[in-house]
Figure 1 (cartoon, rainbow, N blue to C red):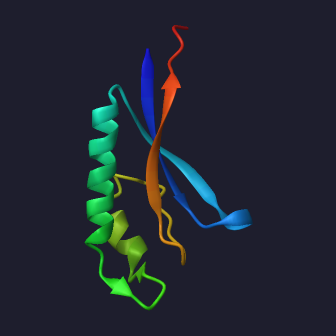
Figure 2: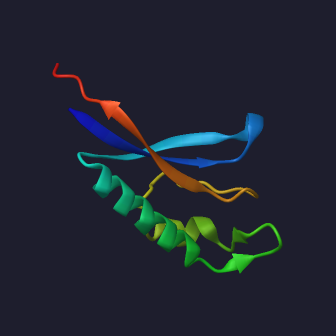
Length: 89
């Protein structure tokens, strides 16, 4: 059986961080969750030329069930999924 693990990422090069967010049984569910994360992220008010969001931590913590370890820097943040084989034991 395969599962689909949604990961979040921010930064670049040596400052890049990645986090595991949630796993799903279907690829469609993982894609839908990422779409929800991205829609929520886009709804944040823009700040400055770097595109960072104002008060992002406070805004996101209000929605923490989506991505409790959310982080953002000047590169923004993104989500993607990886297909992983689930072992039987």
